[in-house]
Length: 95
Image (cartoon, rainbow, N blue to C red; front, side, top):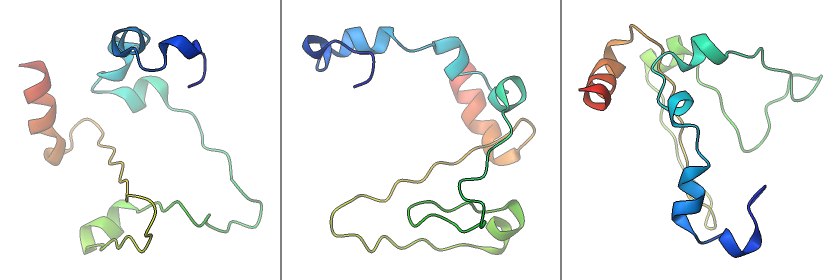
């Protein structure tokens, strides 16, 4: 674990205290911290372990299949302000 002393690797209290909670729960995270992405490869090829789904493709429907027998499938979903699918998540967090 980067920046964590070896004797603290399993100390959950120590690790939780390292989080910037104000930044992490900001409902307008992208607006306040947007950085222009840099291309991974000049050829524009996708890497084998990443996939970006555009909003139109997501609306049309996308299916994911994990074909790995070694790794779990991890999905990250990002919602911006005004997204009706995220409204309930944001309200539950702040109410």
